[in-house]
Image (cartoon, rainbow over all chains, first blue to last red; front, side, top):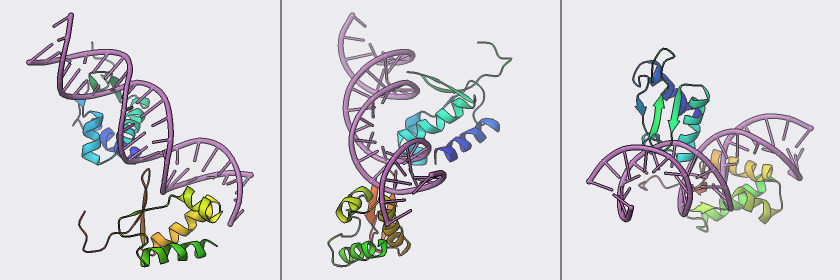
Length: 72
Length: 72
DNA sequence: CTATATTTGTGCGTATGTATG
DNA sequence: ACATACATACGCACAAATATA
């Protein structure tokens, strides 16, 4: 199930729904949208982070990974 | 053997020992009660699920299937 | 500086799902 | 049918980091 969620989010990143450096839904919001536990939401994001698609920022949120060419 | 266990559980559902929407013993508890392996306990529950008597919820447990007329 | 709210990080226990021997 | 192990998922609680009032 967490793989399906990760796949959906990955598609949103690919099609520009979630552009680079954009903050994406919090884990809590993922729980609501997909009706899953936070554990599952986190597993999905962990998979996307492992794939290098997103980065997490404790206390701030989760963001789409910036492009290589982009500055800080 | 798993058919015998399934039959016993089915009787408990039929006589109201396990009412609709009630959580029934976990697979582990079935193992203890009947002295069988988890594989056998799962086979029993799989049979009952196939018969539409129960529904399983990963991470939560196994429940007696609600009546058609019941709301969520 | 304090207090509150939000968000990610971590840990625990329990239960079902899947795979292997 | 047995035994074992690991993966996945739910729920809860608390900590740490950040932002805001």
